[in-house]
Image (cartoon, rainbow, N blue to C red; front, top):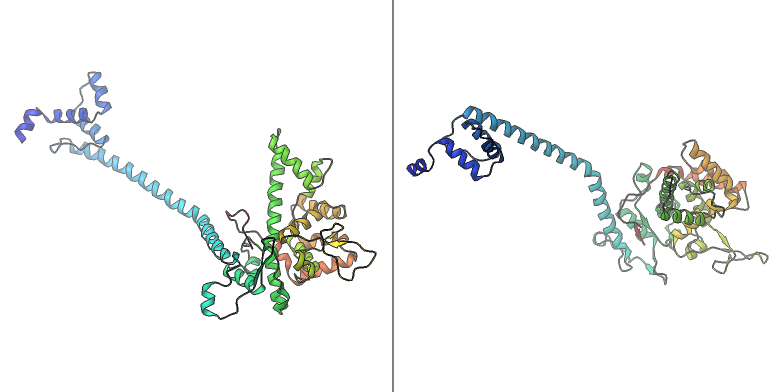
Length: 400
């Protein structure tokens, strides 16, 4: 066999040239065209550079070893860099993965309660014998959970007010109706805690939408030229906030959040912490009046009065109407001006700072302000002014 190789290649250099030609090494071809004679060492280095294995009887081991060391070092540097980049990516996406896991758990648990057929989780059925919770469904395709089921749902999702006060994100789960047996809980503290848990995501969701709109508004105002879509969007916002003269200064003042503590306190006062007839029959959380046919007439109403309490299909609609009321009605102009001043001074917008400007909300005026402030303080509702919704891919969370 060795004799055949010797006949085929006269020298070790010929073997190298043959390998270079066989693998089509460009550098060797270019040297050949320029009539330059490459040494054996140069040929070996070119082959190594192109990752071609040398024949067994190679010559300049020292130069070859040096080149191999260089190649290996470069490869190791690249591998190390890739490994560090991989670890960095893992650390970077860890919060995202955590949110996804939380969202999956949240969605799974909430879906269990979304169906009228579902009552308690299978785990609780095995460990605790209870009567089947009552879940009724009306003609508007909205579900009314009873108080016990609602409390169990929040517990399963790890949603508690103590955690929220400590900075925990609020789960975006939106009840369409209040539990009709909320009053039966007996314990005033438990009743109020459950009421706050139900309303908190609804209020935060409306504020989050307003915040996104404010960002878009200021982005549009900062541009020299606006697209057709942006002009249409502005036109809709002027209509939403009832600004006929399209005054941008008014829009900036009206398009802003309502302090969470203030909304919670007013809802608690106007709905009797979710137990009033208007709240249970018409999802009326804020006692807004109407003179249209769609409303609930108060019992023992004065013959001279013709107003009704505005009713809604779902709780979220009541929160939205309340937000629109404070942001557009002339009676709350001072409220909006005080809020804008807080913005200018880069101060937090809180219920206690703005409660004095809602005296026109009720006929008792200043006494109403005292009542609302007392509710905020007694229940530490200011803690929720900094609360935020849990980020989720579910655009509207889970509605029940």
